[in-house]
Length: 225
Length: 236
Image (cartoon, rainbow over all chains, first blue to last red; front, side, top):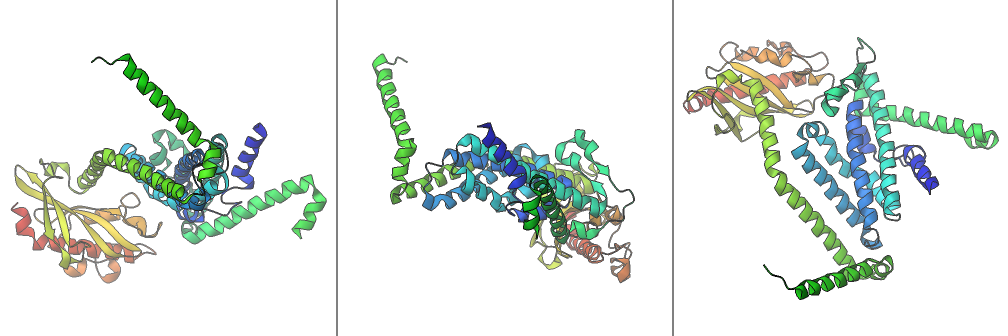
């Protein structure tokens, strides 16, 4: 049993990562990763919604006929996102002012529908929740990594304004990596997102190849050609 | 109130039968038989829609007041930035006047003006306006101006200008916007109400001229709106 949990975790965070493995969710990814803080905010919001949507869909999986599953999934995800949006606006208004923009964007995140379709609608609740957590964490990591890479190259800082999002006690996260940096605007703009994501994906592939090469050097060499 | 034990027993058995029925109905094997049926599919879709709408409706109704309160607090905060608290002793959020502003090209047909009053007399007014022609879309701004027409403060509420270049109109990024304080239609002539590149007195930014140019022009138009309605506003 613990083996399957470990496999889901490895899939979610690395092997079948939403961005690296499935190439999904690129719209919200590229739109918000101008800074590491924004990436973190979007990642956290998505994490909550993907766990909830996975759990809900798994609970109702026997009720949902295959013919109408997509409208039901969309309905559930949209309702969840709207719920989170309204509740945050009312009860966590300061956080909402920073994150509000991202919450609505989660609806456009096809990764949620993807997980509902390919995992939650076929698996028991516990596994679906675990899968949501791991997929969400994997997405969060990519968002923060991409945000950090873009922020450092664009303005030389890291986690600027993190205290606005997480509270004053997280002020220590805000660091200036390159002092007196002149700035590189391209990285803060959408094209910079594509460029940086390409680097990160190449990096991930290179690590995969290196790991595989250590295991079975001969086979992998052929694959590389 | 006295409830007979028979009544309780009766309802308990009813409830238990219902639960047993529901459990049997929710068995995956039973649902598997139902799923291909058209009426079941319709029912499921309708059921989910109903649950979703009820949930959203209830949440919306129960949080509406709180959200409005939060938005009022936000508005109050931005009003306080452009009209110093010493200028008024009234409830500035409630003391408002709507004036037509279509001909001034500040983004709205009618502008809601917040009146700052001290002992019943208007000392300053404050209103939101929009530069509809920013470099990448509308720039939402707010202006505070005293009864003589001198600017008390201008702030950008939100915008989509280029980060790193055009966003210097935000007070958090640069103090450029503070240059408006004390300016009026009287102490600057119309030609001076422009960025330096166009022969005016306001700085442009390196790499971004359009953003400050349009902000200055919109502020100028907003002041003209105030001048045109001056008598009406001051005598409120």
